Amino acid sequence: MQCSGRKLSRLSAGACRSGRMLHALFEVFFLGLLGSIAYLPSAQAATDAACRAIWKEPEVDIKVVSAAPSLDHGKSSDQIERIAKKSGFAKSSSHANLLGLTHSSTGPTLSAATNSQEVAPGKYCVRLDRVRLTIGSRKTNVYIDRKYRKSSCAYKTILAHEMEHVRINEQIVQDYMPKIRRELKERAAGIEPFYTKNPKKARRSIANRLLFELDPLLEEFNEARLRANDVIDTPEAYAATQAKCRDW
Image 1 (cartoon, rainbow, N blue to C red):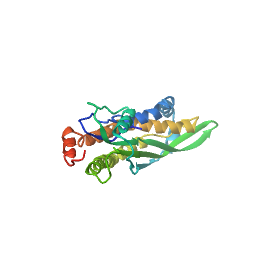
Image 2 (tube, rainbow, N blue to C red):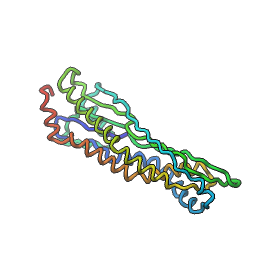
Image 3 (cartoon, rainbow, N blue to C red):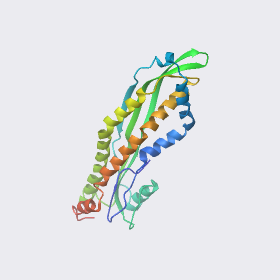
Image 4 (cartoon, helix red, strand yellow):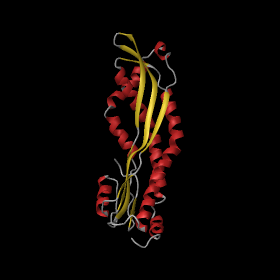
C-alpha cells in the first residue's frame, strides 16, 4: 500500500510521493518467481515447428478497477501525518500539519491462461491462449482533519482537493489504457508455443515475463500520474486553495 494521493497542509509540505508504486508491487510478485523466468527462453529455443504450429493470437483482457473512495473524518492532523509517514513516501518539511490525505492501494496483477498438449510422457507443448491484466485503484482512503465540521468551508475545500487527486489518478489510468493494451497485445503475441515438462511452471513464467516486459511502460505511466498530481500540489496551488476559506 502506498500513499498515492496528496496532502493539503497549513504550511508548504513535501509531496506524499509514490514514485515506484506500480514497480514496487510488481517486484514483490516477480522476485518470488525469478528462477522460473529464465526457464522460458531456453524452452522456446528447443521447440520445433510442430509445436510452434499450434500458435494463435492470444486474447488480451484488461480490467480497470476503481474502488469508491472511503472517507475518514475521525482522525486528527497528527494521526493523518503518521499514516503518511508510515507509507514511507511522505516527506514533510517545517512540521506542517496535514489537513487532508488521499491514500491509495494500487498496482498491476497479470494472469495467463494456457493450452498444453502432452506429446510424449512428461513432455508438453504449451500455448498462450489468454492474458488478463488488472490495474487501477483497489482501495482509496481519503482523510480529512476531524476538527473541521462537514458544513465548514475548510472541510469542503479539503474534500474537493482530495477528490481532485482521485479524479486525476483515474484519468491517467484511462489515458494510458490504449498504450498499455497495444504493448500487452504485442508482447503476448510474441510468445510462441514451446515444450515444457511443467505446464503450471510455464504458465507462471509467461505471466512474469509479460509483467517484466511491461515494467518500463508502467514506470512511464506512474511518472505521468505523479506529474499530473503535482500540478495541484505546488505552493501556489496550496495558497490559492487556502485563500478560499477563513476558517482554517
